[in-house]
Each structure stands twice: as C-alpha cells, then as structure tokens.
Image 1 (tube, rainbow, N blue to C red):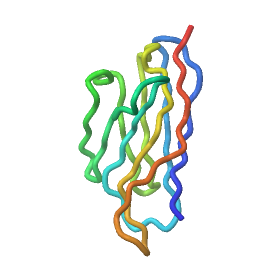
Image 2: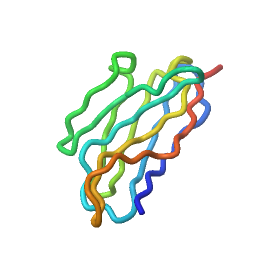
Image 3: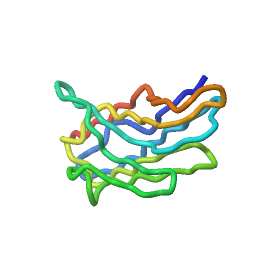
Image 4: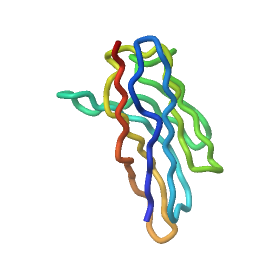
Length: 120
C-alpha cells in the first residue's frame, strides 16, 4: 500500500523559512507529477506548486519567487522550500502524487497534511 508522509511543518515568524518534505513509500512502480497544495481555515484547498517527473515546475502567483519545489526521484520525495513567509501562508500543506503501483494503474495519492503557522 502506498503512503505519502509529510514533515517539516511548524511555527515560524514572518519573514522566516521552512522546508517541507513528502516521502512516498510502498509498491511504487512510477511517479509522474508531484504537487503541494494548502488549505487555510475556511478556505478551499489551493494548488501551491507542481513539479513534473522531468523537473519542470509551476507555482501559484501568491508564492512565486518565495517558494521552490524540488524532488529526489531516487528517494520518491518532493520538497517545498518556503522563504519570506507571510501570515497568509498559514495553512495545512498537503502533498499529492500521480503514481502507479506495481499491481494497479495510475492513481491520485495524498499525504495527511502538515500544519504551517506564520505568526509573531
């Protein structure tokens, strides 16, 4: 069974930095795109960043120039480096992967989420 496990969230002051990690494990045959989403209280979940299997990236306008998504294909891990954090970045951050297990076809998998709080 495939699992995505996020880590690296926490409390940080405005202007600070955090690095989120998301490791996929289990019977993984291949991973296509990997994403980071976030959901703030009372708001819909929104796409923050995407990285393809080839390393192409795209970002939400609200985080461009501050956040960087990267991945280590050998470790089935995606990262989100978050710099110059603002209070409006406060949310639960979720990783998502389009992947194929050995015994099944392609599917959409989610992590459990990690809380990021930006506050003084």
